[in-house]
Image 1 (cartoon, one colour):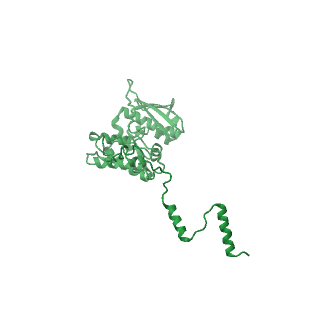
Image 2 (tube, rainbow, N blue to C red):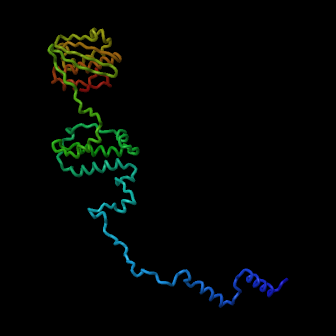
Amino acid sequence: MPSVEALRSLRRALRLLNGSPTAVSRPGCIQRKERQLQPSTRHFSSRPVLGREQQEIRAAPEIKFSNPANDQNSTVVPLLKRVRIVPASPSYFTGKPYFTDDLLSLQALLRKYQTLPVVEPGLAPRVAWKSVTEYKNTTDEEHVKSGSYSKLIQVLKRLNQIHPSVMPEEVMEAMKRFKRDVQPFVNTPNPHFVDVYGRSMGVGRRKTSTARAWLVEGDGEVMINGRTLTQMFGRLHDRESAIWALKATDRVDKYNVFALVQGGGVTGQAEALTLAIAKALLVQEPALKPALRRGEFSVHFSPSFIFTF
């Protein structure tokens, strides 16, 4: 086995063959490292560069620290608006932003105009508001509950009580969005008159039965589809129901009735004829309306039948 001195001699010989410097002592190694750390200038020329003193020194452009948002003549978009999208509504991150915005806007209108004069509760204009299902379809709000929507309807009803003579245009436009497209309370029935022959006509419906009746002054004759009252209705209850408007007002022997009925059953036709005769009687004598209303709950009527004028 070679000795340590032989191995060292072999290493020195290998370094000489590879062109490596010979091993030096420790202080020499430190000096060599210090020489390597010094910057080398062999790549730079020692000759002076012509014209370097004549080069113009230019400073960086001035930084403007003013806020572009406060500058009216500035067209620069503020930084926050360029890097962060701001929702159009503060309720964007809620479960129902459209409903929340509508409710808050109506409540703000109510606070603004709550001191205006109002009409009596029973004299306010009747309005058919959209149902919660219709509201969901128009706003794509799927999480609106009936209880929450009822709060919005209560605010609308309070705004609707403002007197029409001082109703603000802003409130009218806001309520218009929540009204149904078809307002049944605005529709008025076609006016009926007594013709030149002294006849008045009325139309009545009950389930699938329809009746049209003509009244003229006479001695109490009743003709239905070309048949008498007894021939048309075999049951006493149906006969009394058909001419009950005349019996309740004591006009049985003062008018003749000519009627056409179709559809439904016998009882349905009799009750449709009741309403038709009552309407025709109101054309002849409008003052009989309270008397007809008082006869609404007579024992001769079916419990499910109610007069509507």
